[in-house]
Length: 435
Image 1: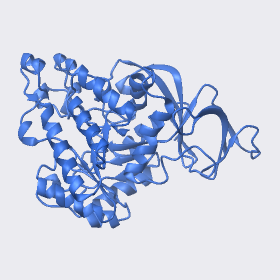
Image 2 (image 1 turned 90 degrees about the horizontal axis):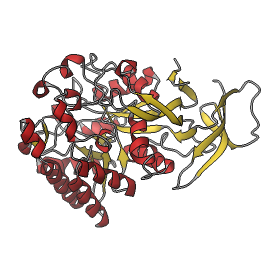
Image 3 (image 1 turned 45 degrees about the horizontal axis):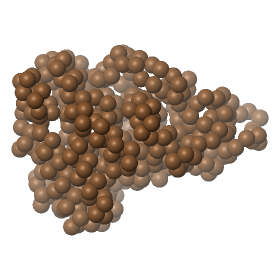
Image 4 (image 1 turned 60 degrees about the vertical axis):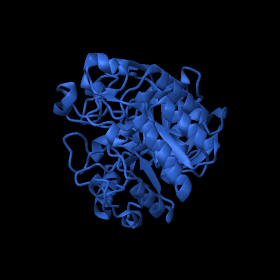
């Protein structure tokens, strides 16, 4: 294994203002030393990181890798390559594959595919219910005891709408410290919904998706979890009302965590006026007031993490009329740039706070001990180097993903991932896959 000396990087080590310029020595999969004038091996490879920021490897708690079953949209290999190019060293793969990841056998398959790919660690998320149908609990214990060691369970894409079943799921995973990640969407309020409900949906003639469909499930599940005393995580929170509910719940001591996607931090419902299905997503793009609220919630810690909800689709599922198009957007390769644009460059957050929301906290929620660690001696060498001064224009055809459904096509965004290391091995160098 090659030893690497990263020189002159601004190292983000935790805390609101804890950044310092120093060198990092990486050897045998670990950070050996951090400082200046380090003793180095004679055969060390040096990377000049002057002007770059060193962050702990990013961790995504919400990724769709599509394999098994939809390899025309994405594979574990292509998805984790895209993750590495985005600065991620670990991703959690959602369960809505084909077959559904509702058994120990399927989650172990996804986990092993991730290890074979080698670009990022893949932690499968197990389905809460058999076939995502919301009628019978899946093999939660078997998935938890499998080689994949599943700790997060979600029917993402489908809400666990039955309150009694949701309660049983929370009670079941409590025994081994698991987490239920809820796709908060009351299905009876969103039948045929196409975009955010409001004046614009009426003008465009598209069936509206009311905020209360999300907010009512969040409120219900917070109360259920308070009764059970388990762990609840809210997927892709998107409305001002949802932020207010979670904020109030945390003030009252309820154990709940929440995530927001990069696209909900930046994009608004106005993009639906183009009728371009690349902007069709679940939950839908909301209003400017909602965007401002989720930014504020992320900044003050009400929203715990940023999660991409990377949702690749083949061309035929997006290059069609709006009503027939699939929901979802790409997110792994642009997430860091979007968060820099929306939160760092606006002064709402520091780089240390970004490391908290995109590495430390998602690793803690997902219970992955090798990731989300401060860049200090003895820690696994999982890190990314970014150039915050760089500017780039998003070109779909340059993506490592098999799909091209990015809503940021043609947009100029700040920041560029220069290098990513997974346990001391480079997965990205000079902005390109290292292998």
